[in-house]
Image (cartoon, rainbow, N blue to C red; front, side):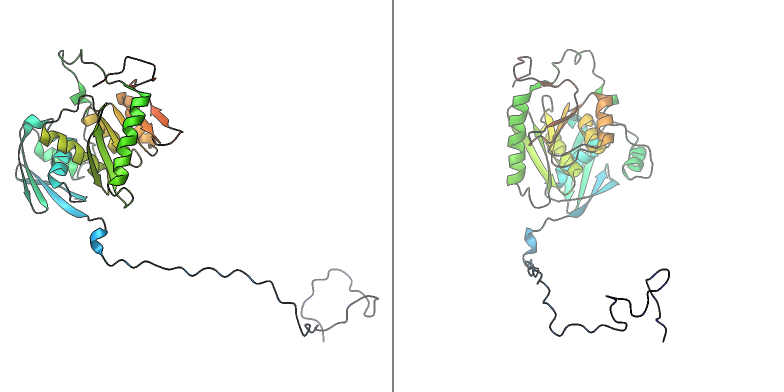
Length: 296
């Protein structure tokens, strides 16, 4: 009987060639060597979650401007009023606390009354995503008048900035910083003024900006600190609030740095590590030996 296939090439050797193994199947040895045993993977165990109150909460908050629904923000509902005011400020519904009227909370709905004579219909289309044109953050609102032209520019030394950043991020960690929340803070040369948390960094920023507007706290001499990647939307919110410096413990996106360059805003990343990154220098950070930094 012919063999069904062969790996040999060319002329086959003679049937009785010396040292040629006999044809046909080869029986296996009776006691084959035991293969080396492989380490068995350890069994995984899963902790069972029974108390759902320890998990982050997330709800949809409806924001009404002058009686008209203008936006819905999915957020951690711990500071809905501050969120609504900061969101309205970010999208240009108001420019300052003087234009903010009554703020009313009804469950998951926040109603704001604002003055200013703006085109609310267009702003509602923008904030709802019905128009692709992005809102103009900051540039028209950053035009200083003659009285503001002589204001002292924002300056802070490297050592002072590192000290305040350490304080802020330590507070972030203490405030359930390892439970999936992202944090934002407003700080000045001496203290951390306000912190907020949310599952979205933009919502956290809106909360701290809204807090400053509701409390009548001026943002002069303040800067923004945020956990997570610095995006273009974060830079735009900082510009809208006329903040000159954004500090993060992570990197920044290319679009964020490009926007910062156009507006001369300083962006610092990896603020907690020895390899701090200066993505863009707007001239707001000075060496420690420089005495020109503004102090409180």
